[in-house]
Amino acid sequence: MFDIIAQQVWLASGATDMRKSIDGLAAISSYVLKQNPMSQHLFVFCSKDQTKIKILYWDRNGFWLFYKRLEKGRFRWPVASGAALSISRRQLAWLLDGLAVEQKQAHCPVNVEIAI
Image (cartoon, rainbow, N blue to C red; front, side, top):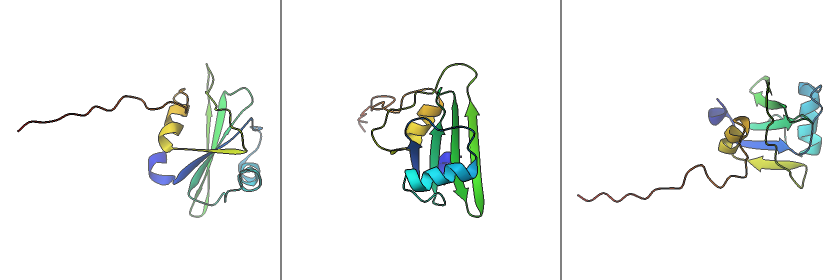
C-alpha cells in the first residue's frame, strides 16, 4: 500500500512518545520536521524502546494512522543527526521487516548478456 501512496518517507529522529495521536504527530511533522503533514508523505515515528512504530499519512480528506508493535525484537531505528531523515519506500519496507535502512542494497546487480 505504501508503494502506491507515498511520495516521500520522513523519519522523526530519536524517540517519540507513543501516547501521541494524530494531532500530536501532525504537530511534530509540521514544527519539528518542518514538513506539511497534509502532503503526500509518510511520517514515521518510533518509541523509546524501539518496539513500536506509528506512521502518519494524509489521504485527501483525513489522516491515516498506522501502528505496529513488535512482540519480540526491536526495530533497527537509524541514528540521525537532524530532526528528520528522508528515506525511500524500499528502506521503509526494510525497517518494518527488521532490517537496517543503511544497507547499500539487498542483492548485487547481475549483468546478463544474451547472445542471439
